[in-house]
Amino acid sequence: MAARPTLRSGPLVPQLEELLTARIRDGEWTLGARIPSEAELATELGVGRSSVREAVRLLARDGLLDVRHGVGTFVARPPTSGAGLGKLLRRARLLEVYEVRRALEIEAARLAAERARPEDLRRLREQLSTRHDSTTSSTAVFVAADLDFHAAILEIAGNSILSALFDSIRPLLVDALAELVDHEPGRPDTSCAHDDLVRALESGDAEAAVAATAANLDPTMSILRKGGNQ
Image (cartoon, rainbow, N blue to C red; front, top):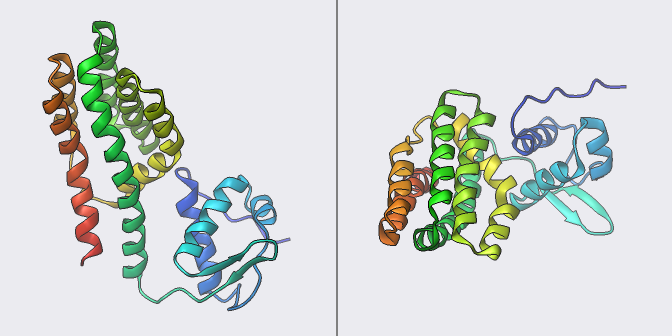
């Protein structure tokens, strides 16, 4: 039996996407061939089926795989040569995630400025400190601390649907932010924007809270957009 591929620590989906792409590129899976099922790949690679499903979905979206429900998944075409296209596609996916994140957090910031209680703000200050302290920690620790901080603002906003939407996309945010931390060296440090956001919430200034949230997210979105136009 072939040895199980070694996966690194960190987000699984990008690694699985890369691994499956390599099997197509290297000719292990030829054009028109049916690839193993999600369950078979999950067992072989020692990962969850949901991670395999997401990686397959991304490759299908990029046109590399053809998912025929009830029949199987087939190789649709080999990867285009060159790393540029892969980077462009990755950035396009990250931008989509950030567009959704921005929509949620802008509204949450506005509501939180109107609804924050003193005890909420004390806890948020503590989470901000934890977030800042984690900037020199591992990617996983930093990502968790950063998203915990933003999830707290969603909770302060007091809208259960907004919070549920944020929770539902959090796995995507984890992968997206980890990708940015690990692979975008030009990603700006937005710690000051986080500080500004807390100050705006403390003063009940909804306009300033929205501006701080935009200052946190928009520079990264600008990088992703420029990357797609290079």
